[in-house]
Each structure stands twice: as structure tokens, then as C-alpha cells.
Image 1 (cartoon, rainbow, N blue to C red):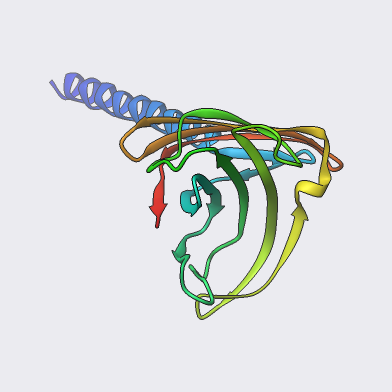
Image 2: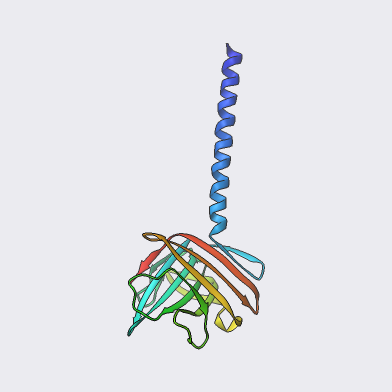
Length: 188
């Protein structure tokens, strides 16, 4: 009888361990999707934001993918969580005013000859935050580092508030690519 209980306990314990291992692996797979790589260094993306500005009859959207939170984008100075580490930013433009960023591919266009285009790309890290205000940071890459206009971001709205972003560029620092799928905070 004791032996049967022992076998049952061991079986249940191994079942729980294998289930938790599977859950951890699935979580890691999701986390691996929310990353980007530049110059053979990988970075995790924990937060995503879209800010919309209207420019006459067109829309200008800033997409921010970060590790750390933006607490108030519209204040002056902007406010960040004290654990904010880095962020990548994309500025895209569409020819018509839209209430939400359309699902479309935005290719880099330095002079803005196309209807839907990516105009700014940047990556900054080493943020020093004190009392939620940026004291300093390091710009690693911006649109001046894009080689032969080889940069793009693909935007897909999956459902209300959830987006998928896939992006890549050829830069003077090497290949830059990554993706994010998750909830996006819309900033007005």
C-alpha cells in the first residue's frame, strides 16, 4: 500500500514538473519573439507604444518598443519608469489621417517619395533615469546608419490593441532585425 502511494506521488510530481517545464518553454518562445538584434547583440522588448500626430491630411505615427515603461509621453519632460533601459523608435507616415495605424509594410524612404513610408529609425540605450526623468542616454543607431534605404517595418493589427511588428534594416553597425507581438498602448 505504501509503495503504491509512493509511486502515485512520484508520478504526479513528474507530471507537474513536466507541465511546468512545458509552460516555461512556451513562455520563453513568446519572449524570444519580443526581441531585436543589432550587431549580434539581442535585446528584449517588454513594452510597446503608438503615438499618433496629425499633419494636415496625413498621419504621422511613432512606434516605440522598449524595455521599461513610458509613464507620460506628452509631459515636458517626458516621464519614464526608473528601470527604463532602452528603446527603439520608428516614425511612419501615411497619406491620409487614420484613427489607428494601418496594417501595412512601411519601407524606409529618406525623401518621402512614397505614400506610406518609414522616415525615422533609432535605437538608444544606457538610459540614466532619476525621479522618472531622463538624465542621459546613448544613441546607438539612427536613420543616418541605414545603408541604401534598406529598412522596413511591417505592422499588423491582430485584434483590438494587439499588434505584431516585424522589422529589419541593413545598417553601418550590421544587420538589425526583430519582432514584437503583444498589447500596444495607444498614446494620444
